[in-house]
Amino acid sequence: MDAIGCQELLMPVINPAEIWRESGRWDKVGEELFRFKDRKGADMALAMTHEEVVTWLAAREVRSYKQLPQLWYHIQTKERDEARPKSGILRTREFIMKDSYSLDVDVEAMQVSYDKHVAAYDRIFARCGVRFLRVESDNGMMGGAVSHEYMAPSPAGEDEVVVCDACGYAANVELAVAGADQAAGGADRAAGGPATSPGGEEAGALVEVATPEARTIDEVTAFLGIAASELIKCLVVVSQERGTIIVLVRGDHELNELKLRRVIGEFRLATADEVADSLGVGIGFVGPVGASLDTFADETLRAGTYVAGANKDGYHVTGVTAAHFQAEFRDLRTVGGGDRCPHCDGRLQSERVIEVGQVFQLGTQYSEPMNARYLDEEGAERPIVMGSYGIGLARVAAAVVEQHHDENGIVWPPSVAPFAAQVLSVRASDAGQSELADRVYGELVAAGFEVLYDDRDLSPGIKFKDADLLGCPLQVIVGKRAAEGVVELKWRATGERDDVPVAGLTAAVRAALDASF
Ligand code: ATP
Ligand code: MG
Image (cartoon, rainbow, N blue to C red; front, side, top):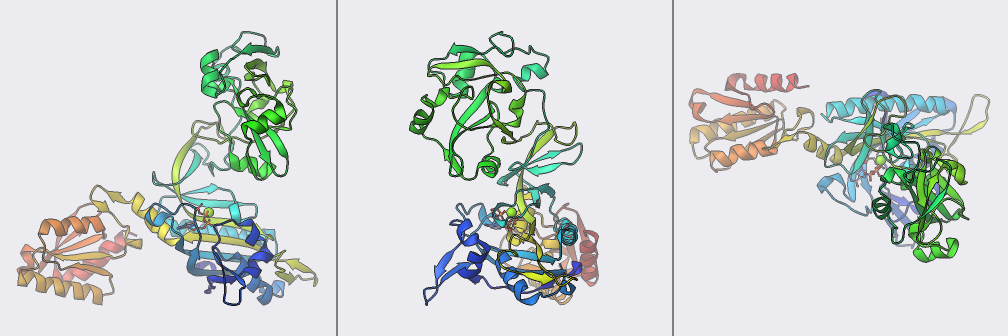
């Protein structure tokens, strides 16, 4: 952060509600924001990030374009009333974040600050030993338009990304898009199958078929002997902004709630009674043809011929194409592994990941409502254009452990190891060994290394196992050759061992650590 010109501050965790009201987040963020009252009865919040404090400060400190750009950071506790704190230190309600903020005169200048952060973050994660993907992502509660997440591939992750091996496109599945596939109307067609619906009619002719008791995707496909990809999945949802509407995705696709929310705002699934009231049909037989509700359809359904509910209890209709119904077509489905890349001919692969950091282009999302303005060269007032950038410190440590371990325990990369080396005497009861081990420990500490010393009087087996489990990059083992002043240096990552005279130990440890950067 210092290297890209970022200045360190320390901002408060306890915030007056006022600034969160000004930014709009007091109402927008739900229960995740810890709120309380002070002794005077004033509403207070525990900061979950620091956009509000930064913008408040910028409104008071920045007057002129001559003071911009500014880059500010701090390393501070964050509080979030997470719905599901879990997975040890991967998700906790209190955690430490390194967060920084950029203040710029315009969008182009913000892009420069953003790019500086991206370059710095790439270096930070590489140096921490984190294997990561930088992916396009949703801005979530932070607001703004452009955002990227730093994702560490790991089965322990809660997030999923898709990646194209051919062109490098990588995105969170929350917003990933897929290229158009010819597979619409049944995977059949792409595979050279008939362009007609399963009933054998010409595409375009609608035919009602009785499907008593067949309501779910599984039941209908089994009953008609078709693939889920030949069916239109029809959901009825209630949105505050748009009322009751129909949403269509292909039978083998999943509706992406975040994508739909971006189109229609907050929504919930309609109840069976609501469906019956608005369409006069049971939930399993709703379809787009002739439906009296506004309809949104996933892009995939522009092409192909499908089976859909007939809006008549006990019936479906075959031969349905986009020409048979009125709908607004949008990207509404969750993209997954095997889908076509939106930028090239490659195929996407999905991967589970841990989000270790995120960068946001906020624009004027905070500066406009909070009046953080500057005077430009002509003396005109303009809103400051902002960015925000966060790294979760404990989560990075957890991701490192998930990516760097073997069957014996942790294998810390030296850059982030809590201790560079662990000293252990094989037999603490042996006076020669424990004296030499004390000396070695003292010398390494004096030379500036952080060292863990296992001087417990336990069996060598337990001590060796524990040293591997804790995973310091180097182990200094004081054993049989203590009397000659020789110790054993063991590399945790490779298991390699070397006998080293104590006189040369500090230099050997330094050389071993330097070599691993
Ligand atoms: P998530 O989606 O995992 O809840 P987020 O997108 O809400 O995280 P940001 O607001 O982007 O998190 O915060 C920046 C960084 O802070 C994250 O990339 C992550 O490394 C860390 N972080 C966020 N929430 C937590 C948490 N509950 N526990 C530990 N670290 C967290
Ligand atoms: Mg995030």
